[in-house]
Length: 155
Image (tube, rainbow, N blue to C red):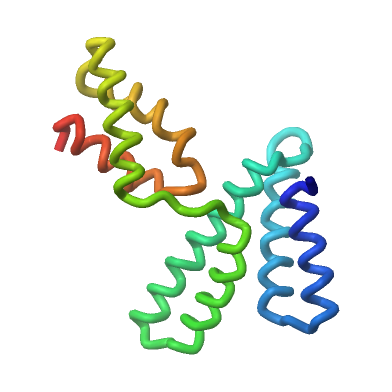
C-alpha cells in the first residue's frame, strides 16, 4: 500500500493532468505543509502516515476557521473557496468520530482512572493520556478535553 504522502503526490499529478485547479492548489499547499513539518526541528525526517494525517488535520482546521471568518465578514466568495479546499483535504482524513463515540471512549478512560484512585489534575492527565491516541486526527482535542473535565466534574 502506498503511503499517504505518495497518494497525495499521485493525486496532485492527476489533478494537474485533468486541470482541476482547486485540487491542484490544495494538494500543493498540503504537500508544502508536510515538507515544512519534515524539515522542521534539528534534523530532516520522513513523516509517517499518522504524522501526515496530523498535518492535514491542522490544515483542515485552518480552512474551517477561515470559512467561518469569511462568512461572518460577508465574503461568501472566499468562504466558498476555503470550503472547496476543505472538501479536498477531507478526502485524506480518517472518518471523524461522533460525540457519542468520544463520550464512550472518555467514559472507559474515566473508569480506568478511577480504578487507580486518581483525582483532580492527575485523573485529567491519565484520562487524556488514554483518550488522545484514540481520537488523534479524528476529533478536536480541545473539545475532548472539555468533555473530560465535565466527566470528571472539574467544571
